Image (cartoon, rainbow, N blue to C red; front, side):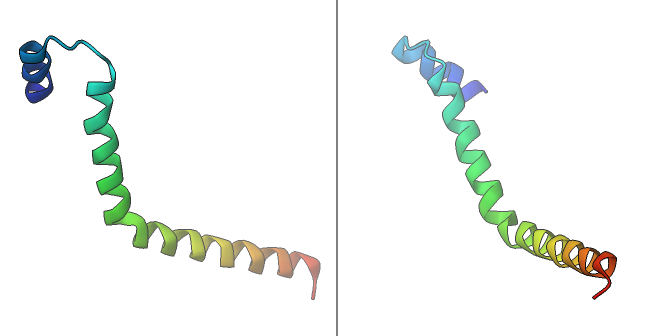
Length: 59
């Protein structure tokens, strides 16, 4: 936002990589915060899918 625009104005840099750096950092923070929850959901889903496959197979 404003900080990136101000930095670009002061340094006269108009590169698109400056706007992607904060987005990548935010993505990294979100992934760190929610990685445990995401893994739990994926594990639960995988267990349910294998249980359904086993029930269809009749074993």
